[in-house]
Image (cartoon, rainbow, N blue to C red; front, side, top):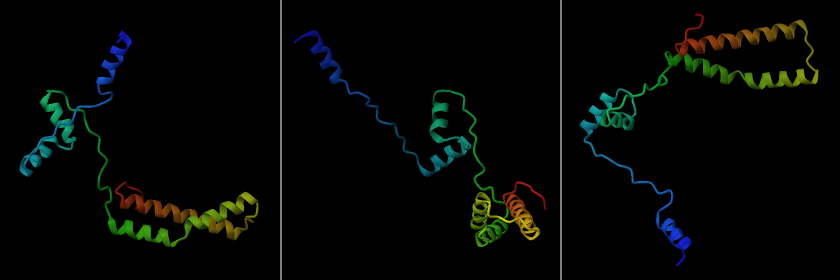
Length: 136
């Protein structure tokens, strides 16, 4: 057997890319609840690792999981938005404008301004329903 064959056999004997099996820990319901409370929103794996190896915990940024302040208002606005056919109408207007087939009479201009005002009102209502302020 040549040297290169031995090197090849050594390399072939080692599992390539194989990882160690993950470590698992069984906890009672009460223990897990206490651990979650102590972790205070930090993922449990990161919290346990930081405590075990005396490492600093990185600050975890979380999104607000329930941003809706007024569910009824949100439902009303989303319902009116769905019933308005706004997206279809805007698409038709855009096509007509791109073709140069949109005659802009005073009536059409007034209707477009009203549509913009309606969209702005829906935006403001959605912002209020989501608790992000917006005009009242």
